[in-house]
Image 1 (cartoon, rainbow, N blue to C red):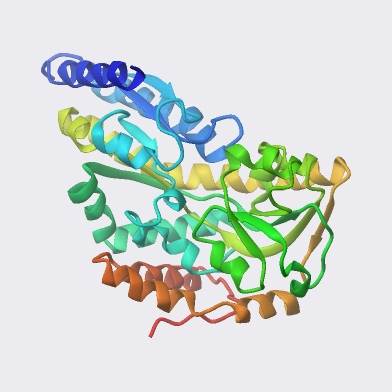
Image 2 (tube, helix red, strand yellow):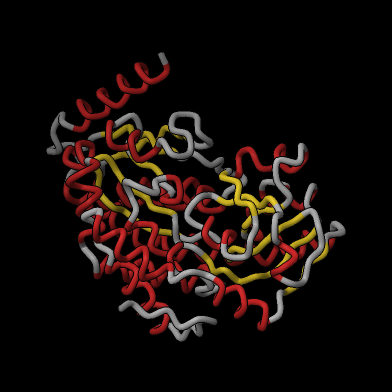
Length: 355
């Protein structure tokens, strides 16, 4: 019933948009995500910067008006459903969150295939934007296969390891049940951990009930989803900040918008990369302080152990490049990301080279 009503709203939006642009029009657009806006900084930034900034500039520069219908926190599309929701027009704009689309958006998961990249989400997001701009097939996949237009990319914070137990050596992770979102599961398999596919929306309860003993997770989500209350040990492994936030708009909706409005959306979408990644970095710093002040143990894995872990991994970049190419998607996105990181001065503990 909810889906039928929302489709009717979307259809009404299209009719309203097609009423003509000789005079000022009002466009009522639904914007959503699988994660909640208050706990997830990448969604907070959608709500507090992307949407209002688009509306403000549209009103000021074009005379048109954007009215937003918020659909965050899985109220319309849950994690792993937002690609299809945008494709069908159930929502107009959403964070597709590529980790939950490992097949359809295999190539867009390129940051996961360069483990131990930069720990700084600002650097990661900027590098990812370079990849989207230099590998146009990434945007073409969204348009030609999934009826949507790329607007922007953002990054979550530095992936580390939050656990219910203390540890110092990678050998101590063997046979421990540790959660991951999907593409980072190979990081766990390399050191003998038992990976458990999960998502942040169910993490707190899963820790409480012993479904797993750890999570590969960045600081702000660890605190945002209150995982530090049930897992008191946070270890900086520096797997890297991952630009997995992908903002897209339904192509049918896009075509109904005046060109001036489209240009503003692309402009703000590009700015979202910097605004969101800066917010992710700052929230990460605050979250580390929160973990320490609430009795958590925060430590850094030694450089020797990081190198040991990196060297224990299979040749993920080359394996995934071949797999992506075989799927008819642009495997060169991985090499482009490695190149963009190196251009930014990032020193990788393992020098990944695409053959």
